[in-house]
Image (cartoon, rainbow, N blue to C red):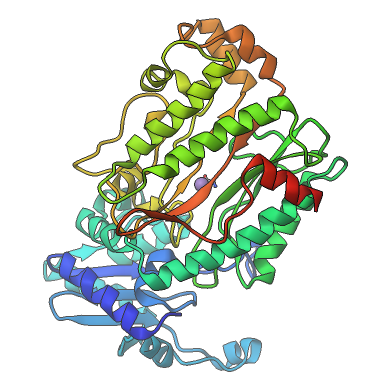
Length: 462
Ligand code: GLY
Ligand code: MN
């Protein structure tokens, strides 16, 4: 964990941003996999980890704003726990490491909250995201689990986002560690991308690399020669020449900071002319999306500029016609890039998305567009120093979407359907980097991972 001053400062800042009452931030519990004691990989809740730091289950953090008191509710270990897990620090010792001096038994949390509520004090909490959290919140707060989401505190959501979205230097160091792990995942994958290899061999390597670097995957690995299936989590295909392998994979560090990188490699390590043309189009969009990142710039403008560049390249290839910018602004570009340019990234790979995509990516100054394609953008707002987000344009040939649009004659003023048809066996290309907004511009985080055609062909040659 970080030193205790960091957690203290974060809680004090949070407290200043919420008017009055009690802030409740529950930690995670273990989640069973196939029988009660066989659990999924342990993951602390990101908000709990951010403000209370302790990486253990069955805890809840409380900030009493009016009395300036920070409390951790938990349970001291029993002799049984010590027999199975060895000696562990006490709850008090753990709390002290994050600057909390008051600990109480978890069994007292419900009465603590109900007494506060009875005195008319507001209890601020965030959206739960696991069913057992909803059940526990119902028990703690006396609100039916189906109604819990109606009672989350908008004031707390805004306050948490305003803190978590501006990354501190120690957080950037963590994210760069996660990108370093991604460097190893992706460069190893490029060398492995040969005919006869199965996707699961590469996906397994990628996950193994995160574990051997004392971390874990930041989301389930996407590793596919069918790159047009955006979140393809099946890994059973064998690689063959002529296909392109999309690997969208990142790591999280032991402090839960993420990376999220995508690279696309031609199987066999040499781009054919068609692959090179589409790849160069996406690369140009990636570079355009990064070029203007600076404080004060609305990221929706970067999205539009990047997708326009993609359309310009597709026009050169006769895949689209008309004005490339208009193709973006009228929603025709969606056929080729149905997702946004990127999302915030931090302790969650889609950072804080559990607090509401629009709360994280938009505000009163920049509202989410309603235009097909631009509406998919998760991070549209004005950039500030400390923002970290992904830049991940792609170009896909999705047969089912193509058929639907062609049958409807959709956007036929922009789309050369007979030309697009020739690419339906292509798959897709995506290129993704993680970028920090600095005081004067931006920094692509981590050691550069091979990205140009030459760099990728070089690393594939070994
Ligand atoms: N890397 C997966 C995603 O951004 O959704
Ligand atoms: Mn991403």
